[in-house]
Amino acid sequence: MITPIDIKKKAANKYKAYLQSIVEGESFNPIVIVGDKKPNEDTVKFEEELTELISCSKEKKGYGYTIEYQTVKTKRHGMQGIPTSISFKTEYDYLKYINEEKATAKFKNDITSILSSFPELKDWIYKYPIKVIENDWESLLKVCKYFKATPQPHLYIRELPIQVHTKFIENNKGIIKELLDIIIAEHINIDEKQFESRFNLKYDETLVRFRILDEAVSLQLFGGIDDISIPISEFQNIALPIHTVYIVENKMNMLTFPAQSNGIVVFGKGFGVDIMKNVEWLKTKKIYYWGDLDAHGFQILSEIRTHFEQVESFMMDRHTFDLFYEGDKGTETNVEKDLCLTSEESEMFKYLKEYNLRLEQEKIPHEYARTKIPQ
Image (cartoon, rainbow, N blue to C red):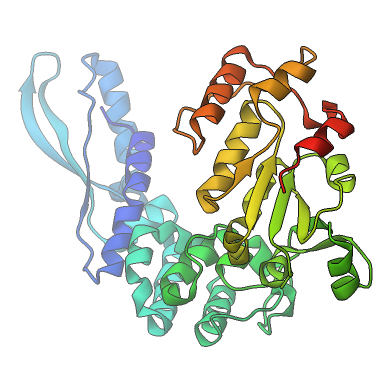
């Protein structure tokens, strides 16, 4: 026989659907609890279970579930009233039994406030009614109203003129993202996953470090300074009179890269080089990439090439590897997708991946490297 504990669990599991019916404006329909246990054949235990079931019902407590019986003749118990239906007849009975009266009152008030300002959120509310209950909508609506009026603030989060707790937005980025994706859909940067980038906010950006390899350019633009670190957004907009960009993965190789006419060298930082994918002016430049001779080095090369198809590799060939390899092992990779590599690069990638080999670029002698830098 079903127990009061079973009933409470099953009733609680129906709470989301009940909230969704409120969103749809439906009147309360009795909630039926289906029992999946047969009455105990032991007479004493049967009586105990039935007594327990009745003790927690509306009949005894004044609220909660109603039991309907059917009198049947049983082999063990003779003529016996067997519970055949358990249901919550009224909204009051249901909510008081599962102790959700206050939460439901809050939910009703919140969705009235939300939909009066943003009717476009109705489908979201229907899908996530529990999130409505769990969150502070007075503050969330302040944030949403601000972004609706100012969808491209270009301010730091702490600068936003919204009367909420100083850390409210930082602590609630997840749900704010879901809401703003709907409310200001036409203004978001859809491909950006980071909250600030997606919603046109300023943030402590990743720095791009590069060296000017042409002294004349360095003197002209930076007063002779040639080692520069700037936020990625500034790097995207910088106007450099150069023709060639070298990307290297080793900081010392960046620092010791020899002078080149009309060139710069960028410290790639491994897979962090992906931050440069939106630097449009790079598409008009010659780009050369020099990474470690291991599987990951070629994966990074492939990633860069998906954004800048003109990228060429250098010192990532079998001849260089055989000259300087010292027996080091790489980091295993399970990448299976097709990479953007030339046939020669693909063969080298497969060889390094199969045997998990690695030649770090800093182990290639400086004098040798100077002779292999493409012009």
